[in-house]
Length: 194
Length: 194
DNA sequence: TTGCAAAACTAATACCATTAGTTATAATAA
DNA sequence: TTATTATAACTAATGGTATTAGTTTTGCAA
Image 1 (cartoon, chains in turn blue, cyan, orange, brown):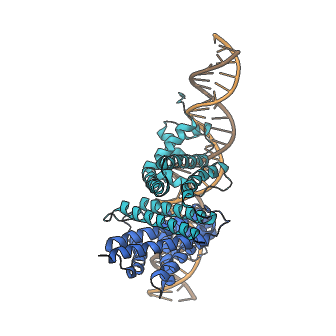
Image 2 (cartoon, chains in turn purple, orange, cyan, brown; image 1 turned 90 degrees about the horizontal axis):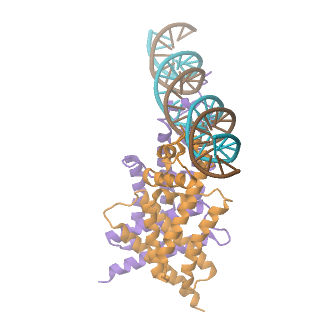
Image 3 (tube, helix red, strand yellow; image 1 turned 90 degrees about the vertical axis):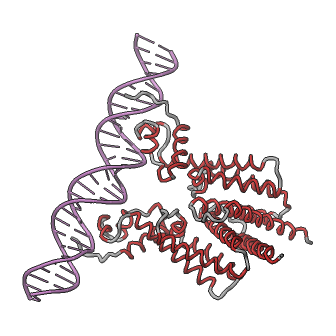
């Protein structure tokens, strides 16, 4: 009757992540997850706290994976080269993991320290890369905000099919990133002028 | 017993929009809407098709309002001035109508002609404004995509509290938009060179 | 004043998440 | 090997959704 499937939290989160990426985040229900694991919904409660905890874990997983992806992409690269690589990696991640990506963005019930830490890791990476441009403290913050904006905006719009297909999406991204890099240079230059 | 409250679709959508903006989009339920209207949930079905239809109407309302806002902001302005005004209006709209704004972005079940039309209205407005820069057909599309990306990305991140508060958010937007305008100029210039 | 279309209702269904309490199993101790 | 025990997975039950069916009531129009 209860054949001890051998469930654990990792399996549950993994199934939830697949569900999110393949079927969409609205399909993340205990019912669907349980079905995929050949188990009754209440059984999940032996391993997780409830649906909200699963969503929080998905956010953590998403941010961790995104961070790794970005870090690897920028590894051993600096300045323009690093930014370009990071931008492509970001957009590619959002495309390959549409469900998980959305959880990296979803408003985290503030005061969730773990989520904040994970998010800060990503921001620290951007900060690192931007450090080579010689920006003022404030300009660096503006630059980080702008970078996050263009990457998230582009990813979100592409994900929802907002861009037609006749004109190359990759080229749009390239032009946008190019524009961003020029902005960095202008900010840096402003700083060198006495 | 049934005092004929005088319900109609407009009222329902209005209440749903308020709910979305004030309590968050997850609070848009027939139950909550009915409560606000002093009515039982099934009564709503005399005026709307179901919860999905309410969400679709919210998307339409959001896009229509956003379009009006942007159009008014850019009225009688051209080029840089128009873009700057439009950008501020966009971000302000997202701040003032956080719930409604999210519906303007939410993936529209493709093949929803009305939604597509509403969205195209906004794109046509952007297209109009960008027409004064003398861009090639393709560059104009890249420019529209980039503009939408920066505006949505910035709005979405600000909405979720992703930006700290020590450094001026308005200034970040200003710098980002300034960068965008410079990009437009570079694209235009590229086009004038034989 | 009567009749009717429709507004709002109650009741019922089906699907959620979640809690409480039960059964069965796997691992450990004797 | 057997007995003990912790706990995985279960069934049953609760309360919340959206929605449908069928009923009552009401306001308007003839």
